[in-house]
Image (cartoon, rainbow, N blue to C red; front, side, top):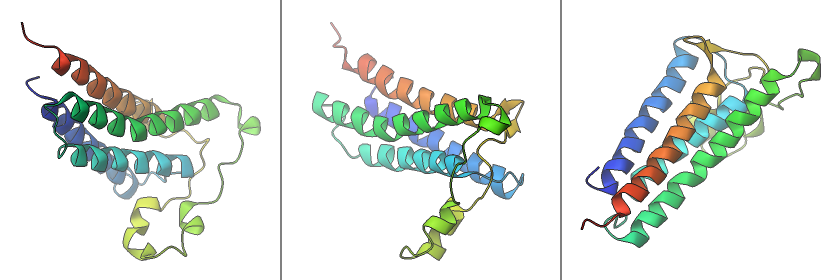
Length: 165
């Protein structure tokens, strides 16, 4: 890696692919996202937006790299927590699984311009239902994505921070 911008650009591309995959799974494959899945989707989009904004920071300076790493890590850590929680929830027997709440479209329907961004939060699946892609449950894919983002951001931070002698 020549610069930290390369790392951030890789995170932006990875996040764009994950966002597209999320919408593909819902609108093409017909998988119905649950409220926890929607939170993970929002976290992926937040990683995308924050990482894109971090490209504007002075990544050649240590303070810029620290700020970018911290800012990109916040939505990734939140998404990882949500994905791990859903993996745990899905590991419980069906009769012990807690409900995951009302659909986001019900919760947010009074928000401004809701109809313009409704497609992002639309879904009413059950959080305990396991949906698979390539034999892997969707929250595991999310956890892998968020872990990869954290590894890229902090691994790139360490690697680009070393001074050449």
